[in-house]
Length: 335
Image 1 (tube, one colour):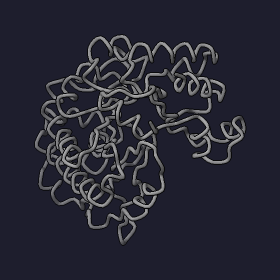
Image 2 (cartoon, rainbow, N blue to C red):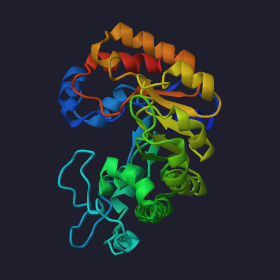
Image 3 (cartoon, rainbow, N blue to C red):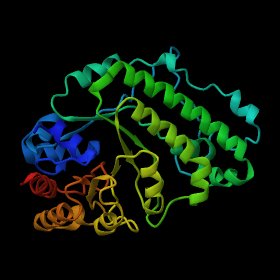
């Protein structure tokens, strides 16, 4: 069984020869120490050495505006979550409609398709990242976004609708052009904090779920396994998300409320596949290689056979030692 077959089977709830493994997507500052320790010179060389089954390949640069404009010109004065963009003070749907929304005709997936064609027998998680929840936050400012759900719901719906219309059109073009080269539609929206979901279940049902379902339905229409990335505690809406078409959850933030392996297994076993779960807040930073090996084995016993072992946040920072990454990979891929 090759890596591609293995991950497909795990996410489909079918038997596999072992659990899966994904190194994640280490921060750029982490790579020099990793290459020095492992004696590698490229990202792919290191992934092959660690028996990594999973390739996250996203067309970040597919949007090519003839004047060099970004996909969404949010016009934010800063980068904090509270910093609002162009719609921070908007109370009119007409202002939203008049905005210069992106044109899918400016998308070019030719380079992306070429990368996929040369990926090898590894699971290909792709499509556009489609972080509509974050981008609505950025257009308004996070607190302002949540207030506008009560004060200006029509404006919130209008902004969200335009974002989703773009992502539906863009992903449809991507899937049409790339076909079976993409195995899983992998997209991200961080719906949780360390302790709970960011808005109430009732607000999820009005402002998030309908648009989320549009994306999962599109993935299903193109025969893609749907993988949701969401950091934080999303326990209270996981059943809803499963009902909306999610096949696998990533990254299982181990220290967030109710996101530990035992709780997930008790509530969701047989309903969903799990990708992640190896704690990056404490274990991989402060633990020994033996501690890491023991925890990986525990996670495999608890969540197996529906688990792809991976860090509980994919962007491994330089404070995670190469020795602990090696230990994680060894324990993940052992029989």
